[in-house]
Length: 191
Image (tube, rainbow, N blue to C red; front, side, top):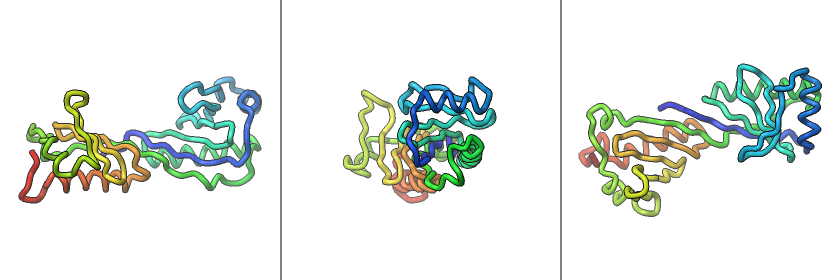
């Protein structure tokens, strides 16, 4: 299992004017590249608090998000963000509301990928039921399975993409549910 993206969020506890915050951060850090307006889907102030770690997006409401490639990187990035916010005197103390919101990971079911087998996704769909999965191969090659702890894209070649999990443990649980429903390590095999 490989975590490819993880997002955490929290609340600073005060509201911000985007332009004023950008100007303040740039002035205090002495770097024009330290803050800019994020025009993306999350719309806020993108704050580059460290050259080694990802940026944080700070919203007008005072909430913020940090994206990273793994849990350890996310924790380190949050610690540095918290330190930077204290150094800038935007906060005093700690940001305790921070929590993981989404984990994205990939996984290969070795029994399938190592032997170049193909999963029978129609059979898998019938086994788990239409309430928890959907499969329309004429539109998308993967089956979409709601494991209850994250959405799983199940590809015929045995590769999985897990998203929407709240922890790395949830990712592992989602993978185990797919394996169980495939009948791996049992008599019933869906490949």
